[in-house]
Amino acid sequence: MPKAEDYAKHEFLSRVDRDVRTPLTTIIGCSEMILDEVQDQDAKLTQDVRRVLAAARELCALVDHAQNISSINAGTVIAEPVLFDVAAVVQEVAGSMESAMRKQANVFAVRIQPRVDQMVSDPARLKQILFELLTNAAKFTYNGSVTLEVSVRSEDARELLVFEVRDTGLGIPPDRMARIFEPFFQVDSSATRSRNGAGLGLAVCRGLCELLGGQIDAQSKFGQGSVFTIVLPGAHASLLNHHAPL
Image (cartoon, rainbow, N blue to C red; front, side, top):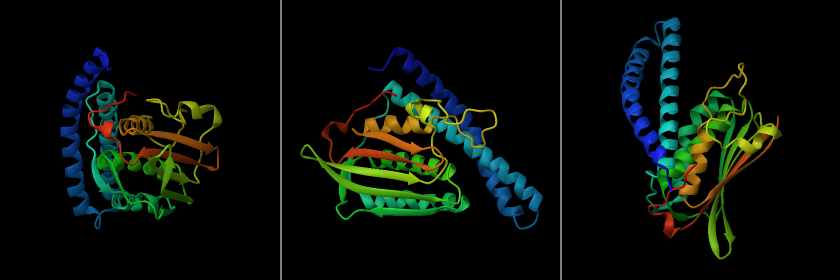
């Protein structure tokens, strides 16, 4: 059961979310308008505006992650399961990642096995998980490959959907693997780390996987890449009003 302090944190972060998101939305909107006007006229100004836009979007992502974690811990997040086409959801997420993959010079492939059809789950939460994992894969992989593969597994008379995100990126040091799903834990916590992030994304993924009645696991070889595996039930009646704390 969620604790009273979790509810208090959630209420506080909800107020912070509203107070921070409004000015950030204005900054992003104005930056996009300025960028449209100057990007073909002033290279220096274009570069500066893009930096502002990237920073604002990064702050928005941080606010989203913090709000997601507090909501899950407070038990205010519920799954809304429906019957949906798995391939359609996967392709939608993959399409949104193409630009990020190209930016990092990565080869991006999506493989959907023949038995994959429909499932009963929350498609919005599934998109959120896949987007986070693919964003991480793109961020930590350069001039390599990222693959999203979806398959079906039968276990104890149940049909499970398996989503694997594989990359050939930096990988995770063995001494840090056990903590990667903890909130605020960063694989590279040094002052010279080159990749931004507060270490919240994987914690959100774990919480949402448990919310959907499934689990997430990771394997990695430092310097050779990582594999993140999500296993979700194809149909899970207990999803409704189910929550799982981080």
